[in-house]
Length: 101
Image (cartoon, rainbow, N blue to C red; front, side, top):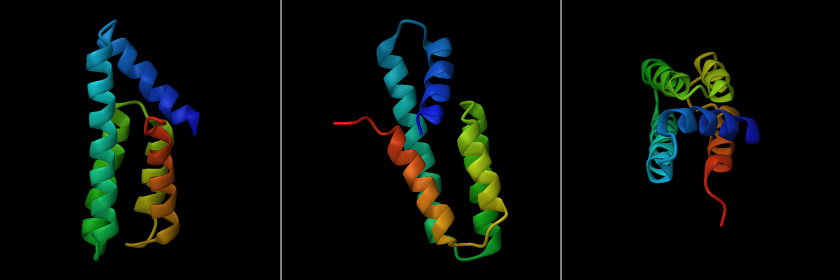
């Protein structure tokens, strides 16, 4: 899912210029924050918690122009709490953003 990573990287490059340290720090912060929201989704046991967390994830994605994650957050909003298919897709998307090796 390179598209998501490319969108985030383009946005961060524009914001950080030539500061590669800041770029890496902001990218790691994005992934960490998104992982935190997915963890909360995995533990959500009611519609309200699921909805609030999915909206936070969508907002985070919008901040970084991560349209693929925004679309998946919309699908999350339309699904039931604990939906294993959505959770797997979210985790797979975030796994693709992790640095390799």
